[in-house]
Amino acid sequence: MDTESNRRNTLKQTKQAALIALQHYDIDWSSIHFIQISEHATFRVDFGDGEKLLLRIHPATKTRSETASELEWLAYLRHKELIVPVAISNHEGEFITNAESREGLRYYATLLKWVEGDTIHKGMLTTENVHRLGAMMARLHEAGADFCPSRDFVRPTWGSKSFTKDWEHLNGHYAHFISEEGIALYAQAAVRVSNHLDALESQERDDYGMIHADLHIGNIVYHHGEPFPIDFGRCGFGYHLYDIAQSIMGLHPAQRELFIQGYRKVRQLSEAAMPILESFFIMSIIEAYSFHAENELETEGLMEEQPYAQALLSAYMNGDPFLFQSLAV
Image 1 (tube, rainbow, N blue to C red):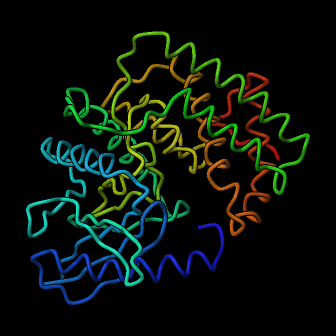
Image 2 (cartoon, rainbow, N blue to C red):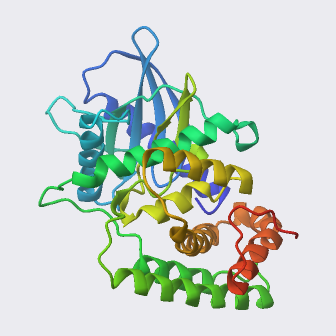
């Protein structure tokens, strides 16, 4: 959603598609509420005695095989007794439903069970909140250890190829929020991250598998103090340390350490993993700026973040630990 005009038009179209999609499900809904637009548009559907469902409207450009594979992964996690959003079938017994706007724009829809809970702003996170978040991610990694995908399973891989693509995109769209001196520092860090990824991928490792890949605090709800993951739209194959890096990137240094402590309560994580985690942290920063680089609505925020982001890059290049330390900006 790179402009406000495009955003308004997409919202109009997906609202129409949502109403059409709901006709294919056996639910007596009472109201529908827009949540947000990201890679898909999401709506909360209310029905019954306070019950809720999550309706997602996907663009036709998003392959159905990837969405079907995401739903397969969610069903597997639910089978492992983890609370995650799982799909509900339509009248035809299918988990993916055709939908389109009145203007004929093609979409498809998925309807999922609602995960009860509230999001928490990072400034309101308690020590226990963050500790439990780390433990929850460790349980996700443990659950995926024996996952055997179906023959048609297709999800992205987060590693050297995806990072190269993201870096090239950022390198072509940085000028409005990163200085020439700044992008030179990014380039040096990108080379180091790439070398680290190449070295990792040349080895057999057991800390690799299906991951959420986007478990920031906006994709977590807390219910009676327990965190539950939502929005698995970016799930795919990758290193567990990359998954951790994505999750702690938006936390304060002290909170990152609490997260790691919580993770270690459930799953082993050695001190030797910390330098690798730092590389994945820098990888995640570069990916994030690449993703937002062309969105003019994000420009002001991206510029404001640069002093801190570049302080992290400098520490990384100097070999100074930075994950759990506050940096002077």
